[in-house]
Image 1 (tube, rainbow, N blue to C red):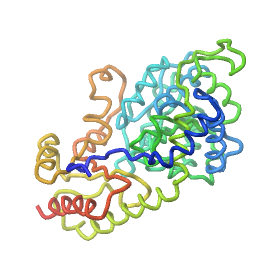
Image 2 (image 1 turned 90 degrees about the vertical axis):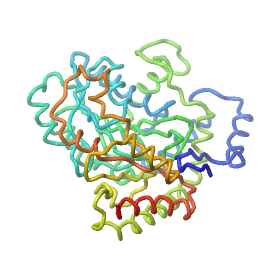
Image 3 (image 1 turned 45 degrees about the vertical axis):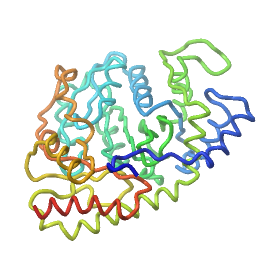
Length: 379
């Protein structure tokens, strides 16, 4: 264990991975849409209870988002904007821009850190004719209601892209197949189901071939190498599939271990809440869905750089600003784009930080995190 409790990705051990690597050697197929890709697709579609909707794997979560934005561009070639929370990751507005749209940054709700419904209503009042889609971003594994997202799509007669990001283990499998959304997930090594920087799209069966074309340079299909779409290289290789499947084989163990650690932290820290003058869990995180991040809220604005340096020096623990050092609308590259009032975004961004923890943390390491929280609470 590193002296700093930095979240170091934990992928499956080579002894477990070798089972799938031997399959690749036997098949002598290394690139895209091969036997292991198809095996992975079948296993995960079964796990998610998908029949009407299908899975398309990509080389990253960002490529999944970009592919969805390309589909929106095809559906609405004359529209200009996609609504997106400023409290998100760079990938969200960048995928919008790369597909030829402009982002409109909207505020979030303090209660769930997701797009505020009132803000969506106001945006459609102003820009209805020019809005192509709404992009929701799941914060740190928190599952946004699929019923609500489908309602937004129906209510505003628009398309919804749900960046589920690290929400794979928390997706509502009972309702997923009836969803008419465009859903993306990431299997970055820091996620709860880690892979090799790969991603996934869940979409209707009718869009499956389109997405397969997009991620493979716009070719019609594997046999007919004719370009029929604006595409790019986002292929999911057999090696990506091997790493993902080797971890997927232990999915139940992963879920149990993460949940056990998270419950221990939340329950132990709960005894301190009410006594702490300075910090508390973000209300969302009083629940124990599966996540590798603890969101902590300071009651007042704080100097994050100074605090982070002090914590690392005194406690050997690293803390991070959520998403990035600043919300998207404050990055110089994004400042020129439209935005709503972002009161909640600015409030949260100035008061929240997160502590990552590892899947394989032992209790003594978790107790070091708890001691840090206790010191804050007794300050």
